[in-house]
Length: 133
Image 1 (cartoon, rainbow, N blue to C red):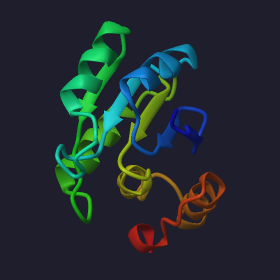
Image 2 (cartoon, helix red, strand yellow; image 1 turned 90 degrees about the vertical axis):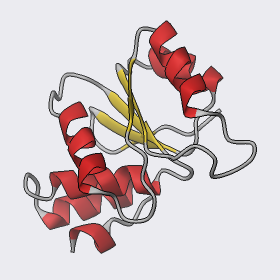
Image 3 (tube, rainbow, N blue to C red; image 1 turned 180 degrees about the vertical axis):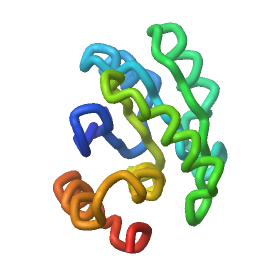
Image 4 (tube, rainbow, N blue to C red; image 1 turned 90 degrees about the horizontal axis):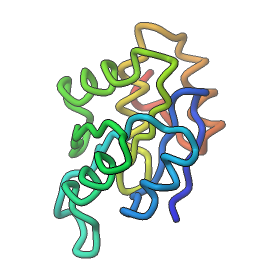
């Protein structure tokens, strides 16, 4: 079972999730799952399509926005769009959760103060200083 970490009431991040974690996400009220991890990074990693199929079967929206290195403008835009409605609870994941929170923080840089983003990242166990600074 993955560790879902709260960033805001509507945005959470997690290390790699499994198909079984999708049911837990649904039970916790998530409506959207964002996959920031490219397929094939690790041999035992579940394929994105497996997670997508489980999400769709559970009635959740699924967005693939893979990140390799620094988040691309396309990945940031996908996360901004997915998190635009604060009434929708979103779970983003990658290998450790770092790329997910960094991608979100980059998209929030024009909306939130740098200090707030750093505090939110710290509270969730991630350092976003490199992408908001």
